[in-house]
Amino acid sequence: GAGWPIVGVRTSRADRDADAVGSAAMIPPESTVAPNPAAGDFAPDATALAAVDDAARAIAGLTSVDDVLQLIVDRVRDLVDASYAALGIVGIDGRIERFITAGIDPQGRERIGAPPRGRGLLGLIIREGRSFRIPSIAAHPDSSGFPPNHPPMTSFLGVPVTAKGISIGNLYLTDKRGAAEFSPTDQRLVELFARHAGIAIDNARLHAQAGR
Image (cartoon, rainbow, N blue to C red; front, side, top):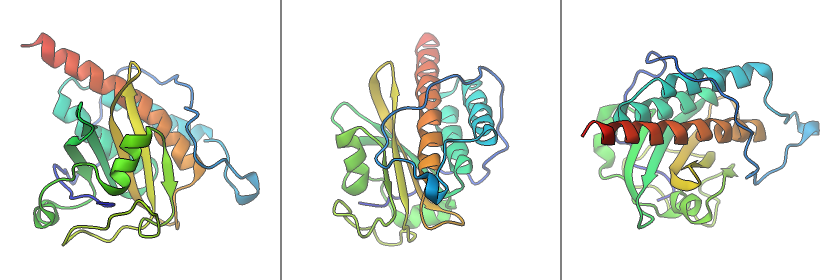
């Protein structure tokens, strides 16, 4: 649906750091909404870019695929102050095969049930392969609603994750804290972080293969 069942969550968000490589990626061009200086929407400042760099170093320092996936979700949630975050790993059939989240406790996760497979807004990002920043999930024509016992969600930001030109999955964030919706700057920060996330996932997978 438009929302997601929350699975695989860890409640701690910023206490699993490691050091490795820095960040030097260009901000991707896939923006659905241009910045509006009059409304205070500017390119990321030095503090925000430093936060991306710190998050990139943390995920690059891990070699376990599971640890990398969870830390990506924890860090991207902090990066743009989202209430909820998820990473959907997409299989060759275009369906979500793994769904890692942050923002809800295990009891809430269990009440929701099975993870999503890629319908609604989650499927929109998979099909289009570009970022979407949406102020109201319910008002969007691709929204297909929420499953029972799902927490209410309003604002949405979805960003693709790729590695070596191949789609790995997508980052999904909802409910910007302290604001009605995510900003163009938030989108740019997540797009930048998504590049590092793709590299970290690819490296962890290679490490796992080498250990077999």
